[in-house]
Image 1 (tube, helix red, strand yellow):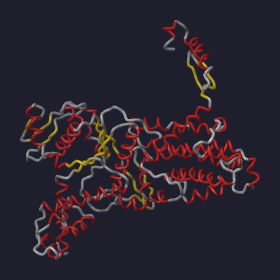
Image 2: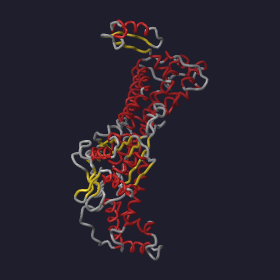
Image 3: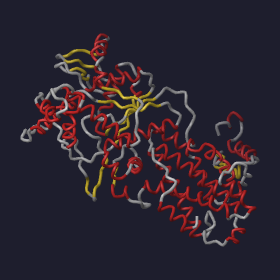
Length: 562
């Protein structure tokens, strides 16, 4: 229709001429002209069968793309204050961030995963004070607890207090370094605001947080410290003040954000008492990211930070950077259920389920997979009982079971090698991908549902690009779920409804194997290898293992005869 004017022909007439030529192409099964000049094409099924060579050749790299010549991206996520263990809400942000990094890399992007430690300020000092109070309690249990709401009450603070005497922060404090009681008494005599309590608590919590994240298969190429950033903060804002981008009013320093990104006023960066605001250090930190050469910044924040986005973008605008250089994904709450009842989370009271406890209870794979079953900005109900269940209503079990079943079919095909009639052994070898085996005719994979599944497998590279562009790693989990469901439905239907299993049933007499359609079986085995490759590659992007063996699925395959 676009070309019709230049060709001086009616659109439909031009479409019919084009359709006539396309109909001669060997890969096209049918061409139809519709409406004013649309041309609808249907490819021959053999094209999809032939295209399975791609996943079979690429293996676990299937779905991934070549590196792109674009500016690198930094993804900052978790960045929880080092004042306590990570809770379940942090865990969702960690998994979303890590899966996004894996996804962007699969899409060909250069990506750095980064953690920003908010390791200065009042909250960290409150942790130090809380440790000091618990140290005094260890020496004198009658020591009264603070009555304010700022201190940290969790049991982990008691652990920090017990570990304090051995901390390098307090080396040389007691005359007798080998007497733990003497070291503890020396610590208890220190004032609550002694910086060493803060440093001890901060460092131990940082180590604990990184250990938890490592358990969750989350790692970072770079870690930044707010304390380090703050070292250059005075000079940074003095330069902005010199350029007229910041001005002093009533003793405080304001950044000229009014009118940018919807901001209705200038924002304070240094309070009248001389203390720098969190916004001041955050803006300097983001400016430093750009200085390090990143072309785009993606932050994973909790949903309660929604109002902070315009402020940060306005600040970047003041500095002369495009505000949309900063992208923010807001992660909604996790409703953790225990026996049908919600579990409350509060770092200050200590009444919360830690991420470590969740991982220990349900496993890494279930934790990661379930966190990715919903879009990041949708609330998520995490059912612990369901996550532990080894049944097909557990989404991660269902996905991993699908991969294990595919693997079990291929293993059983290997076991059949000694029973297959001699003339059919080359067919079986071809289906299993043995080098030197004769090609399998594309027409041997004949069923429409087999062709549909082949097409679904081949959509993974596009799914990766689309999910990366949308910043939605949960789409990869959806791909796995849909592909697994489609194969399970096919597998069960061929065996139970059509008496047409992928492999000959174990009860089949040896002599009857001679009449088995080994060419069709070979085509199906090749197809199954491609499906398994796609499932494994997609699970890898999600950071979830793809087991080859699961006891339940192994039994099921043997009972059903493959």
